[in-house]
Each structure stands twice: as structure tokens, then as C-alpha cells.
Image 1 (cartoon, helix red, strand yellow):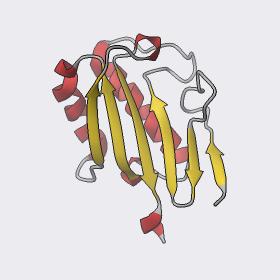
Image 2 (cartoon, helix red, strand yellow; image 1 turned 90 degrees about the vertical axis):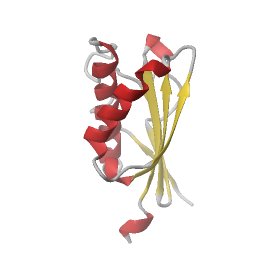
Image 3 (tube, helix red, strand yellow; image 1 turned 180 degrees about the vertical axis):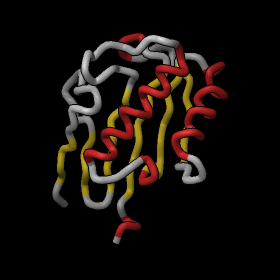
Image 4 (cartoon, rainbow, N blue to C red; image 1 turned 45 degrees about the vertical axis):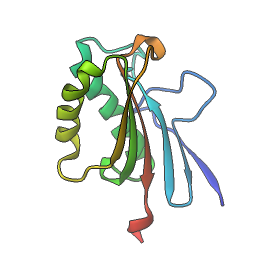
Length: 130
């Protein structure tokens, strides 16, 4: 099965030896997105609310570069440095996804790259697109 690397300047460039996303068949694996502004490659200010919105905006940009949208995400993993922010992230996620929600795990971690408060990785499926 052919493997295609997904790249967009609408999301932060990879900060290591990995792709923003990789498509293989009907699946797209999106690397963990942290709240970096894609233009400046700096962490956004404004706390967990602003950081979470930036992460979802970055995810959305990568999904669009892959030919899809957030609605195509079938599984997400959210990493939080403080699980006390769980309700805030849930509320923001509901704004972005509405009724079309993916399967999801939320994991508390000690630290994330660039001292981010949140990171999200995702898997998109285009199997239903025929």
C-alpha cells in the first residue's frame, strides 16, 4: 500500500524527524499537534483555552491538507499536563466537533514539548467516502 506524507504551512512544521501526517490507504495518521503558531513557531499565550483552540486549529489544517476535515477523525488521543483542565478541553472540543465526535482517550502527562499544556494526535478514516 502506498504511503503519502501530508504537509501544510497552515500548521506548525515538525520540530523533529517526523511528518505532520502520513496517509496509507483510507487512513491518515496525524502527528501530535501542540499549540504552536504556524507562522512564528512559538507557543500561543493565553492559558489552556487559547492553547487548546490553537491545537484544534492546527489539527484542522492538517486534516484539510489530507483532503478531509475534523469530521473524518475517528480516534484522538489528548495529552494534558494537568487533568484539572479536562472539562475546559471537553468544552472546546464540543465547539469544534458538535455531534460528530470521535473515539478518544485523555492522558495526564508530566511534560510536553515546548512546555505546552496540551497535545493532540489523531487518526482520520476516509473509508466511508467511497
